[in-house]
Amino acid sequence: MQNLKKLVVFILLLNGLASFAQTRVEGLMYLTNQPVAVEFKDGKILSVTKIKELTDKDHPWIIAPGLIDNQVNGFAGVSFGFGGGELTSQGVLKATKELWKNGVTAYLPTLTTNSQELLLQNLRLLATCKNDPDLLGSIVGFHLEGPYISPVDGYRGAHPLKYVRKPDWNEFTALYEASQRSILTVTIAPEVDGAMDFISRSTAMGIIVAIGHHNANKACIDSAVTRGAGISTHLGNGCANMINRHDNPLWPQLANNQLMASIICDGFHLRDEEIAVFYKVKGPDKTIITSDVTSFATLPPGNYKNSEGETIELTAEGMLRYPAQNVLYGSASPISRGVGQIVRVTGCSIADAIGMASTNPAKLYGLTDRGSLEPGKRADLILFEMKNSALLIKKTYVNGQLVYTEK
Image (tube, rainbow, N blue to C red):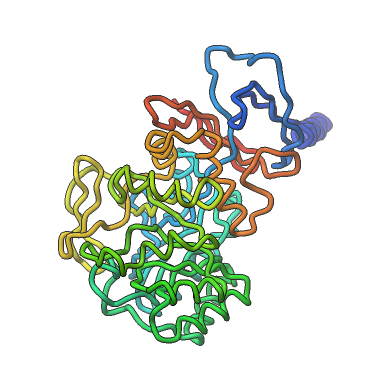
């Protein structure tokens, strides 16, 4: 009995020492490319210190804050928009762990245009998952993309027409409460009836209003911004293929200096010259790299079915198509691909690219404890190398815990 007591005391002592342990990670600072040591404890960064050289000279990896993706429709076979009880807490955990492998340490599960019943059901489940300790705080809130968007083909994109509707504040309030008041951002078409009042009310509640899947003119866009709209959702997409060269929704969004822009840099949604122009206009401080990634990411090429039973094609090149309208159906690439792509296309620095994929979304959504490597911030960080303009994740830490190591 005495020996058993000694063993228990020994185990408790070890656990106590572990709680005081600090972790030290070295890498080339993404801002300066100089060697640094980052020390953290209990999920918080304690210090970021310049060092003479890396201890492991064979792996001169870059160290940076973890990526923050504001538009994740699903991942690795898990969809946040499927109905019939298909979304489960186990599925959310699976998707999150797979995102960690791609350097995403925080994200906004995104629900697109659907029935009120399904949106309520999935938001309730996701709100419960948000507090799951196994997710380590990776879900920071939710993005509601629709249903208050343009019903017009092209601008509507792949959103099902039968569920597109005008803004209804009582309906939205029910969704907001179902999310445990964790809807951080809503994408809306500013030209639809009731949109302006909706934008004002949402902004007053601290919700970030984005404009997307719309065909608004300059006056309408400017009015939306005046009322609080702050960002364009995947600029250049959610747009008809045939548009007027003068009167279209792209120019006024680019021209409005108060409007940020999120862009999908997966190699399919935007051509290189579009990315280059958008970046030149908005600059690194008003651009956010997003993925618009879906459940089809990581799956093999082939034909699949969406929640409506319609055919979705994933090509061998990685393009995700919605053949019924000959438009893209979200992305099959994680945000890490976009970081590498924007460096290749624009020639911007790695520091700016990380800023657009981490620092900027953290600022936009008020995530004051994330988005940079500084004492006091969460120990959400990644180690990676750039190879042929591709960002290759080597290790991911979330809230101070090592959650992924490349094998």
